[in-house]
Amino acid sequence: MIWALGGIYQRAGATDQSVWQLTPYRVQIAVAGDAAIGSPEAAEAFRSALQTQLETVVGALWQLTVAPAPPALQWPAVDSMETLTAEGLLKPDEKADKIIVLTVTEEGCTLRVAARELDVRTRRFGPVIAKTVWQRGKLRDAATDAVLEAFAPLAMIDGADLKKGTVVLRLKAAALPPRDPNLVFVRPGTYFQPILRYNDRDGNPLKIEPLPWTIFETESVSPEQVACKLYTGLRAPPIVRRRGRMEQLALGVRPSTAASTLELRARAEPKPPLAGYEIYEQGSSPKDLKLLGRTDPRGRFVIPPGKASLRLLMVKNGQRPLSKPLPLVRGLEPELSIEIPSDDARLQAEGVVIGLVDELIDIVGRRKVLAARIKIAMKNNDWQKARQFLRELRNLPDGQRFLYRLADEKKRLSSRDRMLQKQIDELFNELQKNIVKYLSPEEIDALEIQLEEAQASKKK
Image (cartoon, rainbow, N blue to C red; front, side, top):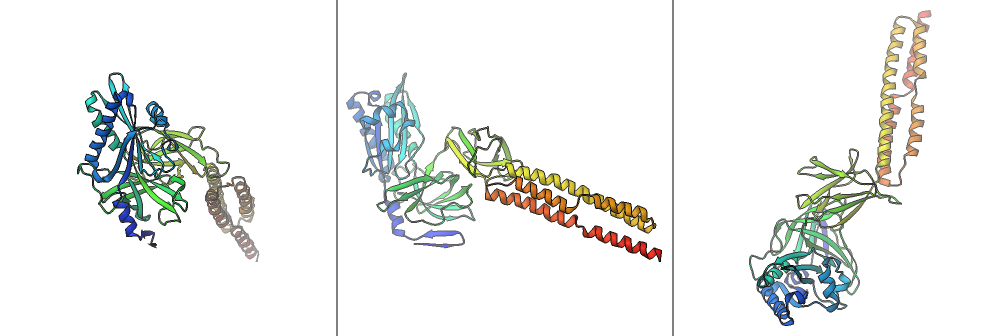
């Protein structure tokens, strides 16, 4: 059951939340690289020692299993953790919440321990966490540290206030504190990525997708909830109401030192790449913008890692922002893309309007000068001069001529993007109002009537 008020929503179902918060993570650790560890007996002893140490630290928070990686996984995992796939790790009847692949390899005189987590519910891999060991006696401790760093907490989105920019999360197993009180997986500053999971009637996933350009930053943590600040580049992120069998989840993410590549494409078909668009980083205030660079001919720009963990990017073409600030956790996604209105037509329209406005101002000024001269000539009874100035006034470009030009330019600069076309229409409509207002023929007609009447009265 859901009830909403003023953009805020809450979900009923305390029992479900209690089960979620009282259910431990089912964690499977698959160890690859027995050859680097030593003999089969040494490898078995290492796995047993690792499980004992992790259970001592984590306690009831995890239901833990440490086992050898399947033969099909041994060499791929040792060769490159980056090549792992969810399909290669998941079994048809998979019951785990987390699968953490742990590899041990020899690198010269040292051992390298690497861990990478797959969150089963969201099908998302975490980064590779690697540790270097100089002594075999330290292998278990290094493996424990790598596993704990690789672990990503999972939460349900339980409430949101889009106006205030806040989100409430319910952490899985939040009511089961770790045995080591110093072990903290979520603290202020922890980032979460929202992920939408669409299920069939049996609870199997039909589609799982991260919510683009949306990040939660933890502000406070309690056993009952995690209060977060919402950063989103979307106008209306779909997290304010539940839709059918859609699960609204949030997975903990960590910044890295990797760069990310941003690709810009036009929103309207055929969605060409947008080259030469400016990428800014927002600082402490919306006006504090630093130019990072421009997109290349393929519409791509490599975002350097930077110092801040959370970065807010702004896309501009000319002086106009083309998007809301886009949140980006440093190094989270190697490839990012966004479709925005191609602003080229609006910029051309703006240039045309500026040119026509300059002409309009010049003509309005000349009209006022000639009108003043007509009145002076009338005052001096110089009817010939007055009529000469009136002819010059009538020969100036009139409003109708301007409106024809405006209609031609408006037709030439049309856009398939509805929002962009609306902006172009607003530019032209504003100029059209000023043309009608300042180039009205009634002012000239009134002057001619005054001239006729003044000359006729003098003849009498």
